[in-house]
Length: 246
Image 1 (cartoon, helix red, strand yellow):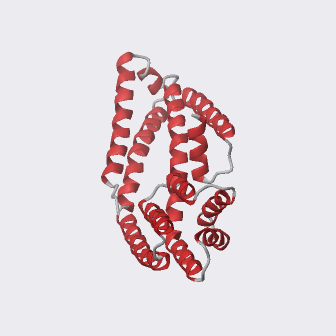
Image 2 (cartoon, rainbow, N blue to C red):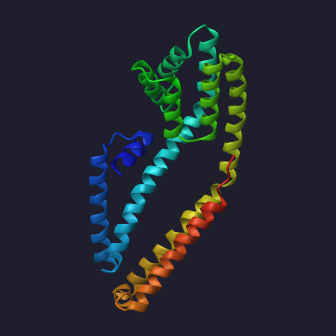
Image 3 (cartoon, one colour):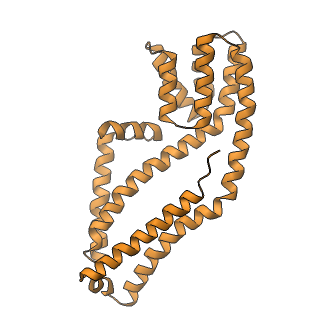
């Protein structure tokens, strides 16, 4: 588990160790448990703790996705810099190191990791494959495959990278258009559970102790769990519908 957390943290770019992350999560879970139990009812304490664990994992996934998206938007520039450096007569290893110095984060940071791995003796295939696994995306897989195949077969790296640059620019514009079209749907996905939680807080504020009395019976507890599950199902369903692979 610690290794998986370390890999996720490395992909997010956060300056947090796995131990610190676990301590932060435990502190958040305890705080949410106590707040929910005191503000709502004791029954909501464990639910809030579970929500805190889910939220911590979602936070890492969100940071990883955000960093990946930023890296994808820089891929055309990465391909262009590598093509220019290769055309100037530099080796692919030197081109990667030069691109790491010229490009901004996150592309510069990720390429710096690859350059450092190459400097200590790792093969180009292993370093690039690890980069693709750390920031998974179709665009990066295409770039990595192009570099690996060109390095193995000794093909025309410059022409391949220039053609890839044009393709990446087109995919970048397509992704931007799709994201704009789906912005309203994504907002609805987050609004659905927020409305449910807001309604629950409203009921408890209008009738103090209503949630405590409702969750005092088994039937009330089942009703709360089912209703929260339906809101979660609605969130997941809307997110699935709005997910389009490009």
